Image 1 (tube, one colour):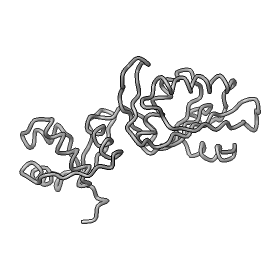
Image 2 (image 1 turned 135 degrees about the vertical axis):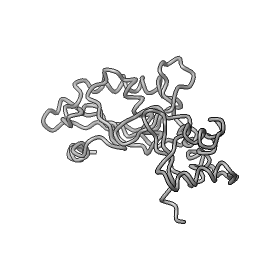
Image 3 (image 1 turned 30 degrees about the vertical axis):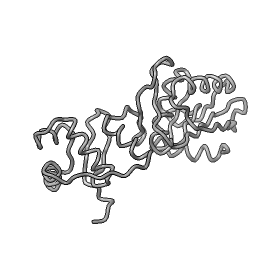
Image 4 (image 1 turned 180 degrees about the horizontal axis):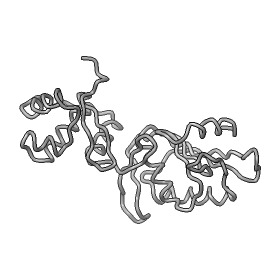
Length: 220
């Protein structure tokens, strides 16, 4: 990637596949964003670009490269697949933007709060934000990454759920558990299977109370 290509991407702003960080002051937080990208669609993380879309670059790129490589090894599990491109700033050749391309994960990745933590938590990216995946989103991700198909039994609970969604836009796990008068774990499991079977879609929420709606992308 050259500087002109970088400028065009930055001009579009942060989004589902692009994140900006001005400095590597808190490298662990940058790794958290990388994990979210890997668990979603993959994408670019530019170090040396501010939220205001100004491309300032980093003053000591070699030092920041070392810091980031160490942080990625310590805070991401399993190791992330990424490549690093160093892009000189046209107006200031002494500075560079470190452009990390994070590949979409072939397995679920976790962010560890400390290097000593055994596994960590799964993070995902929605639009321009990265946040912790709910237990339901976590399970859906595992199914998707493993490309596993599922079968489900269409019973009374499923009928109650689908009838509700014919009249209402979406439902949460807690709402479904109350509606069907079933334990929350059973409600969660039912919704997960229907998402994996592509009957429903899951819409992650930062609160952890994800929405479930009919999957309109599937032809009837």
